[in-house]
Length: 208
Image 1 (tube, rainbow, N blue to C red):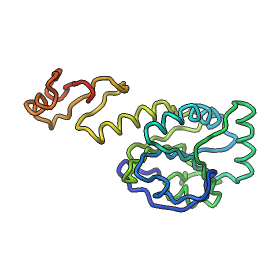
Image 2: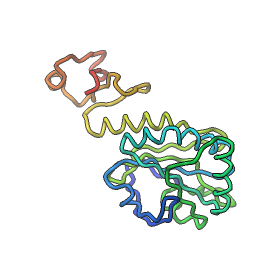
Image 3: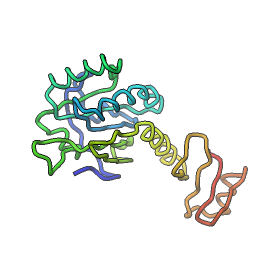
């Protein structure tokens, strides 16, 4: 079953495409995107191409990227060669292929109803405290938007450090919202440039 927001990820050891890893050490004090993938999948093929283009931006945000599968290594290797030929895509992020299913199970990625075993098309943003900050699960027929996950990463990092919230269409540099628990007089002290009040529960300020 997929993990919920706030779940503490267990530490684990694995051999990734970039070498042996212990998850806690790999994460360090940063953020991470952890997602399930399937080799030879049309949706995952396009996702890898899109994610590789965004990988440098994830890194600039202090976030590492880890893909997880249960496919045999030879199948993954053949697929990665296809990606190089078709899309000129050579993933620079880490991949863990675990046909035993142990690592995917620890991460809540195994589909409990699938036979033979397969993974849910889930993705998590992991905060520096190793807890899930965001989770999403897509159907196999629809590609995940990693640009939206990147937007959510930036929003989650902002709201983790500041007492603000972001709108459904927020992007970096745009106004943010204040939580209803923040008193108006305190808000005006914190944001002397102005607080736009639409309702007591819906107030906007410039992004701090």
